[in-house]
Length: 420
Image 1: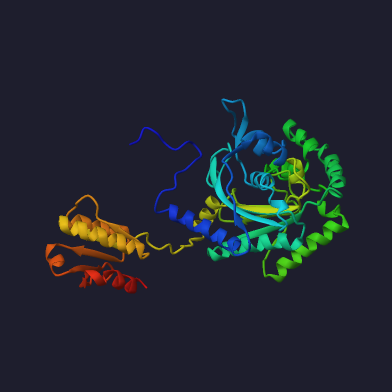
Image 2 (image 1 turned 90 degrees about the vertical axis):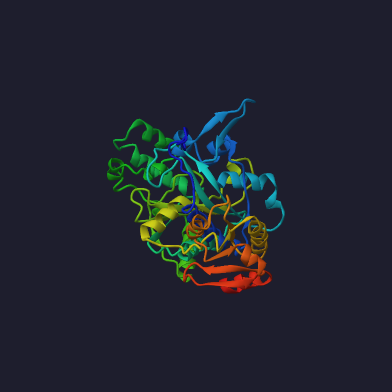
């Protein structure tokens, strides 16, 4: 056994389970690729200030969970705890918003890091697929992103997820609500840290999961009662577009999300089969984030879906993805000459797009055929000196056990025809 193990709160993706993660990433990104979103990849670490300004000093992510460090050169960096701030920073740095084609539509996939207490569905290293539409204020854009996420989950076969929807208002109406909420919260019996949060970002108190806090929030002023006419109309159009598209959602007036940059539309995907860590993804509109990190006014909207939690949701529902075997053909040579010839055939099959593996290590027929079975291959190619002398190989169907001789020069075409 190795002396080393994966760090606490992390995991290794290894076959065959890793195939589920790849399939989930592909399913989530597929609708985005079909809707004008281009791929973007950002560094795994950024300037600490990018997250403290954008995500928010009052958030647990920045104040408690961020992996921050100082480099040998004195730079203050942090492993990225989320994707939106990094993607927006990259888009601004590359002046994508000046190309004249707004919104700038981007999707990404990667690893993120938060120092949290490890538990099922909550890791210190986790994977997300995200999407951002930068530079346009349009309720149709908000609806599009929610619809694409819904489409992705349904394509995977998930059925027990729910979409929670709310509006957080904007810079016109939220300050009035903020003051009313602060007045209410100051009279509650809360710990000192939560009281500090009241003064910095009181909406975050609504997101507190502790039962003793939630109990006291009964009767708290609701944002819906403070929304200006423009925010009400905007939110209503988002709701109408979702309904027209057949997307089922639930209005959740307490939905806040854990990041400071959200405005207007906010939403969350939850799955009731995951226990306390029920959120599998979420997002919303962040019209002021660009200005927070030193850019121009660029109203934007986006989401991130957790790959890890989506896999857990699939397993909770008992959904099998029908992932094909990584190997369709397994070649078993008997002797040195067969080894040379079959290795060449393996290369030809791979070039023809047939997933093919080879019995490496010079194992005997019995051991090599066991490996062929374990590989999941539909067909095995077996050849010895007598087969080669006749210009043929034996093609064995691993399901039926049937075996027949196939000419060397016809093998690739025969295998492709059988697999089709």
